Image 1 (cartoon, one colour):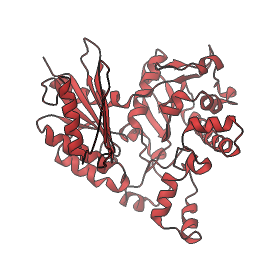
Image 2 (tube, helix red, strand yellow; image 1 turned 180 degrees about the horizontal axis):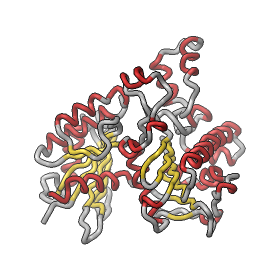
Image 3 (tube, rainbow, N blue to C red; image 1 turned 90 degrees about the vertical axis):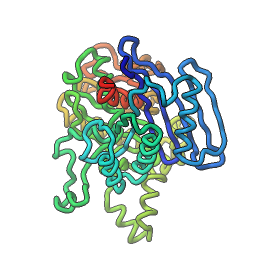
Image 4 (tube, rainbow, N blue to C red; image 1 turned 30 degrees about the horizontal axis):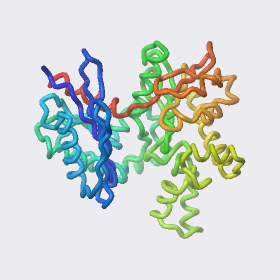
Length: 404
């Protein structure tokens, strides 16, 4: 019998998220284990592991590096009879944030692929190095097993040049690979297909606006299953107001901060990526806390919420114009899935575009895709929980699993 399991690894600078998923069609896909290793390299490292039957196990202590982290993960899986040496393991799928224009689809990893991911570090300095560490460690543990890179940017490579290019001098832009790449692609891909399914239609038959609203946030315009525009750009800084990122900004602000504020490039980078957005506006980047403070009359929280919604509504309108016709708007990720007030405010006043939410439906919480627009609405409004690990497993298995 062919191997049917895929181990999904998402390696951060000091963490590793993982899921082991059985892709067997006859029995339906199912998660066999999920877990997280965090604070790698610290005295307070922690591993949380939950097998399919529940009963989370947690261990703490020093986990020195990613090699030790993956070995600890392998040991936890082995305790459940799911070790990395299992013949049922078809492949390991890795999240890689930036694939540039080199990678437009999931790719089996070899030395050439690794070198290209490394070459892209200057445009993803916070993410690609950690992704590479996870890949190299996993390859060392199972050199015989196919390892697949699934790129956050891949879904957005279908954007036309009119959307992907900045109005910069062409030679300069090309020399430094400056263009709009987009991120959260695995989430946008998963949600766009799941939304079409919710509508009972094929992805190629619908136009969608997907709003991935978490601490990081991005929007995409999806025509017939293909991305035609997205809010993030060369880096994940562009676009919507986020938890700690500014989103869209007049580029001259940077020059002003250098010349008048005496700030260095690194200081400005930290300001825009870690000290701006919601946390810069009101001191909180957790939307739940902002909503609580807003409800109590806190003016800073109210202003932060209003700025967040204003930017979000602008993108909904812009992508409606790009698409010409919209079948659905889908909210996803932590804020999009859980903050009913954000969803209601984002479409308030857009009734002329066919957008509205039903208050009762919008108030319902759940883990399944659902419509929150009134019955008979011209444009559906949906909440579609994202599942990036599932998407990575699906793309990985489609590439290598059936040949295993």
